[in-house]
Image (cartoon, rainbow, N blue to C red; front, side):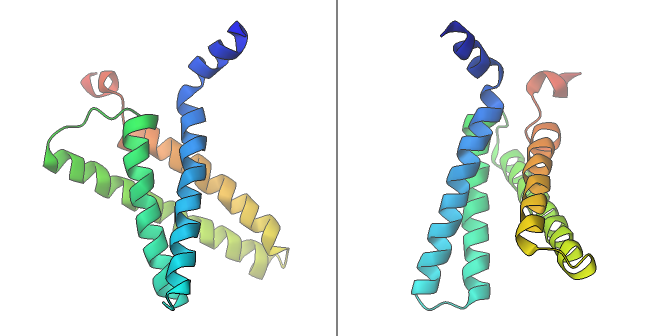
Amino acid sequence: MRAVIEIVRKYRMQIMYLIFGGLTTLVNIVVYTGARWSHLSINIAYILAWILSVLFAYLTNRKWVFDSQTTGLANILLEMVKFFFARLATGVVGYLILLFGVHVLHQNDMIWNIIQNIFVIVSNYVLSKLMIFRLKEKIEK
């Protein structure tokens, strides 16, 4: 039991990132489904679901994953803008990876969707940890 507690303690950030990533995906699916049931177009439903799920991801990542110590409205807004732009950038690259696999290599879209999702998840974590929610001791150096 001690070994399990030590592993959880050691990898807390990564575990929390995976938990809240799953919840972010759920938010995206629920919002998209609700928007489509409300007869919104696919594009509007997708954009609305993306915005609300990224906002949810920002709030949960800020508090429970990366324990952001940023204060002040201007600094928090800057942190939020960085988060949204990082998510937008990795989303675009992920989409291009999917298109490359399907349209250039003529391979299965499900396989390339998994590949691009792995890229996006890892990239989002790295960008969040190193550029958006830097730890206080790293900033002071």
